[in-house]
Amino acid sequence: MTIIDTEKKLSKNAINKLFDFLFNMNNFEKLMPSDKIEKWESSEDQCEFTIKGMARIGLKREESQNPDWIKLSSFGKVPFNFNLKINLEEVSADETNAQIHFEGDINPFMKMMVEKPLKNFFNMLVDKAAELKL
Image (tube, rainbow, N blue to C red):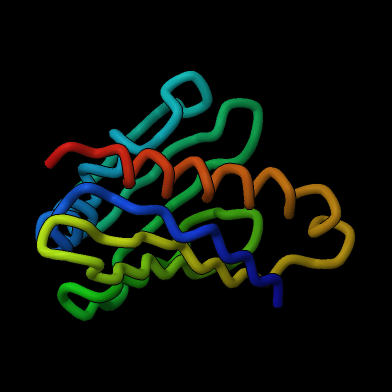
């Protein structure tokens, strides 16, 4: 099991506003790097996209605890099964810490190739979530 945790990033949004934004999977497109993502499809509880030059990724919302966390799981023809947990922590009435926790079934050979790009990708997602003005 490969585990990747992003840094905690401070968002200038109330925890409920950030949770509501992230709960709707249609909004995830706003977090993605437009130059690296294509063939985006989404609904309120799942999204699918292709990382240019790589695999098609499917994410679906599995569980949540309002306003503390949202758990997403992989689906479809993904290169490996994984879960993402978006953790939110209230700092003040209008500030929230956001962090992503990744757990994936990656074989050792593939892990060497994808661990650093995945960590960079997840850190970019949490950075973009922190920059949101909701």
